[in-house]
Image (cartoon, rainbow, N blue to C red; front, top):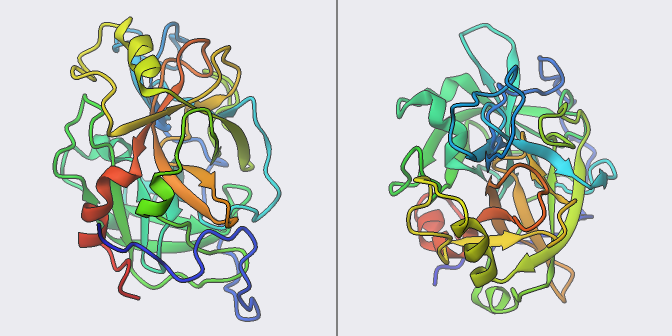
Length: 327
C-alpha cells in the first residue's frame, strides 16, 4: 500500500504562520450556483424521485449524480453553517463557460497536497472527454463561495475506469498551476492509511461539508455547511438501491463505494455538493478523507443513504498521479 502521508495533514487548526497569506481573490459569479447538475456537483448525482420541471430534466433517470446541473443534492441537507475556515482542505471548483466569461461554482473538492486536489469525475461530464484545464480554477480558504484564494488549474485527470452515465470509479485529480500557499486556514486533509482504514466501522460518524443545496431542488448555500451522520452497512445500502432499476450502477453498490446517512433521512449531501469530501475523525484527532460525494436518491430521503466513492480503494492511483508521500 503506497504511503499517501502529507506532513501535518488532517488538522482543523494547523499551526502554520499566516503572515504572508495571499490576499483573498474574489471569484466572480452568482455566489455559487453551478449549472445545476448534481452528481453531487451538486451532482451528488442523484436518483431523484420527483423534480422541478423548471430546473431539471424530468426525462433523466431517477438516480442522479450530485452535480448541480443534474438532480443534485443540496449542499448539505440537515446540516449547520460551518465555522469560517474550520475545514482548511475544503476546495471550490469554478468553471468559465467561455474565455473571459464569469466563473461559476461547479463542484466541491479537497486539498490533498500543495499541488493537488481531488473531486468527483462526474463534475467534468459536460466536457465530453475533452477537458480544457484553462477553463477551471480552484479556490481555497473560502467560507463564502465568492471569497477565497484562487488558483489556476494545470491539469485534470479522470480515473481511467470511469464511464459517464455510470457511477463507478467516480474520482478525479486536479493539479494547480502553482503551489497552494499553506496557512492556518488552508491545509491538506489526510488520505487513508491501512491503520486508519481498518477503523472505518459501520455506524461510525462521518462528516460532509459543502456549498450545495440545503433541500432538494432548493437554492445553493453561499456559505459552507457541514453535517454528520453514521456509515451505513454495505449490504443495507446495496439492498436500498436495488429497489431502483437503474443502468447507472448495474453491478450494485460495490465495495468501491461507502454509504452514509440516517435511516430516517433528514441529513445528506445534495445538489452542488458533488466532489466534496466525506471525512472521519481518528483517535489521534486527525481528519481523514474516506469518501468523495458521488450520488444519491433525491436528498436526505428515508431509506436511501448518500453514496460516496471510497477513497481507500484508489490509493495506488492517487499515489501514481500526485506527489503524495514524496514531499
